[in-house]
Length: 160
Image (cartoon, rainbow, N blue to C red):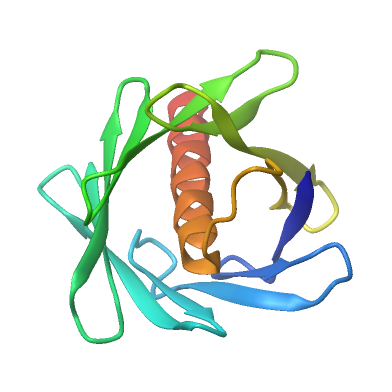
C-alpha cells in the first residue's frame, strides 16, 4: 500500500504529501464558498469547475482547457469518468470507521480516504491509502480527494 496525506492549510488549501513528507501537489479553493478548485502538481496544473444548477457535476480541465474527466454526484457517491470512457466509483463505507473508497468497474478497491478531524485547528486532514496494483496520477488523486471533501461538506451541512 502506498500512503499519502492531505494536509489542510486554512480553509482554502490542501497539500498532498507522500510518506516522506515530499510535496506532490496542492488543491486550492478559489473562494471559500465555491466548489471550483485549482490543482497544482509537478505534472502541471488543472482546474475543476462545477456545472449545473445543483452543482452535482464537476469537470476537470487540463492546463489547455481540455476536459479530461467528469465527476458526477449521485445518491451513492461519485461516478468518475475519464475522457477514455473508463469509470470509477467513489463511495462511502463504514459507520464507526467512516471512509471513502474508490472502486473500478469490477468493484475492486483502489484507494481509501479517511478524514482525520483536527479539533484544535477545526479542520480536516485526510489519510489516503492506494492499492499496490494501482498507480494513479497525482491530479487524479487530488480530484478524488476534492470529491471526498465535497461529500464531507454535504454531510456536515445536512447534520447542522
